[in-house]
Amino acid sequence: MDTSYPRDDYPPASSHKRDPSPAVPGSSPPRDHLLWSIFNTIYMNLCCLGFVALAFSVKARDRKVAGDVEAARRFSSKARCYNALATAGSVLLPLLLAALVITGVIHLSKLAQESVGFFTYQFGGSDDEDK
Image (cartoon, helix red, strand yellow):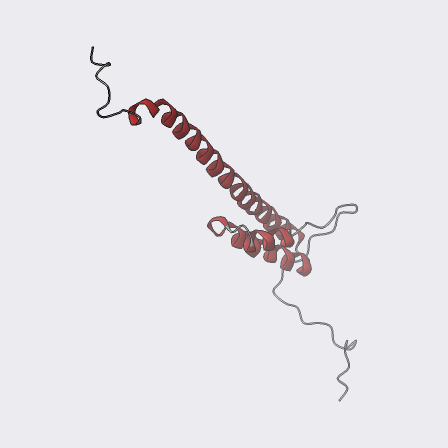
């Protein structure tokens, strides 16, 4: 029995895949944003958005390999949205926290400068102030 592949005598069995949409000349295949999703999953996993983006990126790549361009575009769009949310949240939240800490330090330093007279009150000392 010859087991060499590919076998030309038997057509491949049809599977339950969708028929791939006809490729429009000049249109590029959808991007799956897999590298961005991996980066967000490992380094900036805010509320697990990076992991959700990674799942949609893998789905987009699978659909692109299967030839279902429309589904690949949908999953790619969702992956891009979740990646953008994860990146924005991971950049903006530390900046917001730093701004709050800086304004708090400035406020406390002004409060401390205003209350220096209260903490330098001398108990006992000369009676010249009472007169």
